[in-house]
Image (cartoon, rainbow, N blue to C red; front, side, top):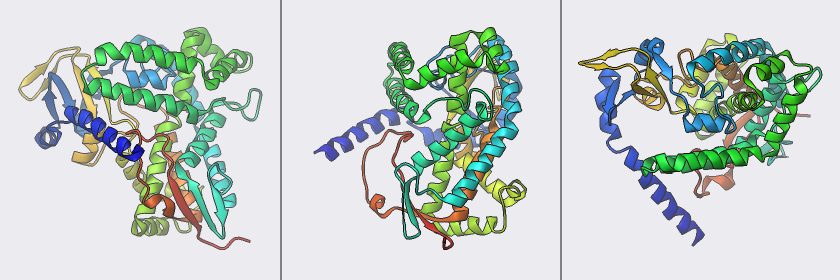
Length: 412
């Protein structure tokens, strides 16, 4: 009965979501040539190249609910601020992220080396037996990338230590509220439901141990971190809290999502796995970025498994599209998933001035972790999971995804 109820609920959810996708295939065909189409007064851009051309005359639309969630339900974060506020925030935050690029690279390689040397059997949900490890790859990847992020953003070798926080627990709040928000949009209730969702999510975030730890970190770090001191003095403590939520969640969740799906795809396609393994034969973590074939393959997979399917911006000036003149201030939605499906290229980390400043860091982290796991293990689906059927949230941020990892070489 429980399984039947779960299945019926899944059909109900899918029917609601399908209302918003009605006629999507036709619109994709219609937009394949021009790279855009009009829907309900909105412009939907589905071309990678057209998005690139429009980058200079579109401005990020503020106040979107997903951005609000990725800010720990704090207003005016760098993800959701106006242009004036963003320019002020960018000067501080983007400079800080750039200064941590080498640190991210070093810690990503240290983490990958640990996987190659020690393996994954000691991870949460993992177990080793006779050269075989069964592991929840989703949780394992989250833990690895979260650790890389917190150490790189913090001061592990000096006062303060890594930035605190449990990204895994935050994904539950994000997933639930993204799901309810999607239902409100497809059912036409967004205008009435979203203010309630914002208040509820803010109350929940403020009561999490992660939020308390970040607030404590911000107060104490002002005495030894010039970055935190300038951020709090310029933006205020509450806004700075939102920025730190963005830094920790934004440098973990999209990369973990892509890495987990890449590894799962290799488990499902043994032929491709063999080809990629041959591709990295003889490589090391130090030489990996020079392996053009592997770098291109990872980039292609990041395009395939994008986390954010779209972004909405507005025109900063009049725009001519075909026979129509688009006025200043008009909304344009950039569909990254359609760009991928129609043209084969997209923007996994966004584009234009408001694109993710840590995109190159994210790609490097993904390359290192995929390389480390594939270097040590042959990857396959866990037998107990192959026939398992259960309902999940559409995003699957917290899915339990068991894989069997077989040692490629005998270990002493």
